[in-house]
Image (cartoon, rainbow, N blue to C red; front, top):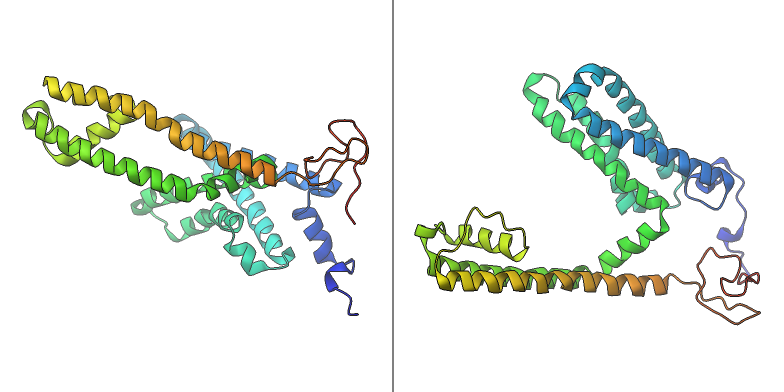
Length: 279
């Protein structure tokens, strides 16, 4: 029988780097993740601080130097991930691969837009550095559960928002007919804007109905908004619950026969007995 190549231990440098960069169950891997998380937090904090006029004037050059230092660090990390990955193309197309690329790309694109005329373009590109904070999700198993739950509930949430959009358009058209331009409802898009503001319970107050019928519709719209808010929350809650159930380990404790442990659990959370790994 031919031996599976995946079972042969690899001692090459590429395997060791993959174990450190992609693995979190080793001491070196944990240190690598912690160091990278610190770099991400500091880098994103510098982006926020650089938008403050006083700090930008006094420490703009220092911040720019540190931004390039972090850009080089993230570039090396991205290159190493491509090198270590067993499927580099698949990783580059994955969610985290795209986030890694977007976290370093603006700094290099800014080099091709020199001069005062392109200042606004450079500022817009720098905003994309905030994508670095999304890289933190890679190191949080709870974040991965939430991300998968959001993806699973995507179709249900889309249908929900589509239905709400239809309701908003209908109510906006009705308010335009009932109130008219004399009360600030000068067009259907303007009326739809009022409906969105009202149904989300924001209520800026820049447009208010003046007729009794319009006020009655406004009251109905506000009550409808409170009812609608709970729907996407319930959808996401159900998906998170199901995802957490799928994320549970199916191993059964040999002492108390309890199942449903965390995947990385070494001991039973009910009786404390050591859990046996499936071989």
